[in-house]
Image (cartoon, rainbow, N blue to C red):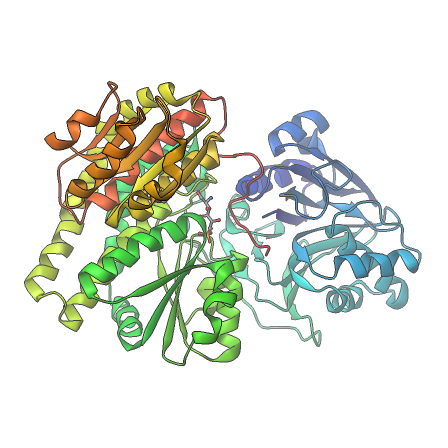
Length: 610
Ligand code: M6R
């Protein structure tokens, strides 16, 4: 949530242009409001408003702003409504100090009051403004920016990162205290940002900051210090090999469609990663653990549900799935030194997940295995070990290819673990891995090709459905939840994903003539799902089936497009590809409704708040 970008340049006089170019790569982090503060000839030009970066740029001419340094911020609102006054960056008491933050201040109310009592003019209800006032306050005391930033950081509680500067000093300062921060050094510019994509247009020489560190940007150098004692740290930039063009649409109308279409390649890439030498460490962590908690949120949690079924079936090992936010109150006291928390997070920055990571580390009860996509994330640096999802950038807010990769990782780990613990004999394990490697990428491509047009046509018939259900059974439990999440997230139709045998225990009462219910099935479970389909069909409900072609399912298909038929494969591959038609259905439904699926309202891709 929220993205900050600060740039100091030796040669530029048109800082707005590069700030807009770089920070627009962080759009997935926030698009409630946007602002740029640029320093030109010793004065700060601050322009901000509600809307996406493209809209605000057009309206206020952000990219035409003059100056040699500045800070941009893209906001996902938490403290304070998404209004112009709450948009970031902010000034301090006077227009000399400017700055912006990402994250949340937990002592917002007390600290705001304290600042007002001590004479500060706080204009907004946004917690980011307090970071700027804190620096302003300590600058008055010390007359020194470096000390003012250090002292301020001690006052501010929570998980956040911020960047701040003064109109009459050439540096920009930034601090990391729980939210991600990356810096880069280019030939004539230095840059600090919430995430790598906004650095890459300028340079691939980067430094990932750690919590408790501050960075000072001058036109020629970046220096990293420890906030606590001000000690200069020896941090050298490393070369990132991430492709700067990966965060572009490449001819697709939306990132979401591009990312769905990348899934066959994701299957190849992630299976390649899983077969390298490091997987021995991951399997040993899994083998040595006496309890396995699976902790995730949103789509990552849905993938974890699919994983739970793979672990049961292939490894005979129970995974305990739990939402990140639930873990503390539901399971924290049951952790032992032999527990393993598998923390699944695309961003590696989700606060609900980092809370669990911190708890395990602080108590020393158990180990952590991260499954993550963003290289350089907090989860990557702090988990005992991590498995990369190998998806490249996922820019669209709805998760698609990363969810797909996560489910493949679970299928692979469960197979290897099952082979090692004797739940599968070696030839069985070998044939599952062969199937994943050799068949899955093609199957994913065939599924995209085969279901794309069906999903597109089906979408037009669901435009006016105020709500619907998406039901799964056994292996497709997590798939149905994921399909429902996609429809809710980007189409704004209410869609509940649930276990199909549970539907008769209450929700069935909603079914009237033509009420749509989607059933997702594997060939192994369709005999059971037919009962659940019947319960809806005999009450006049409209049943939509996602799965392989089976004659016994045909009688329940009413409309031309009500069978999202996936290619024939194997029961272990069904749950992996069944999600694809649901991703496509939600995509087309969203577009038909005039929504931009990449940027659904009220959301952010990276949720670094509680
Ligand atoms: O980065 P994470 O995997 O930790 O994010 C978790 C959820 O916020 C995320 O999966 C969210 O549900 C997706 N936008 C859904 O498409």
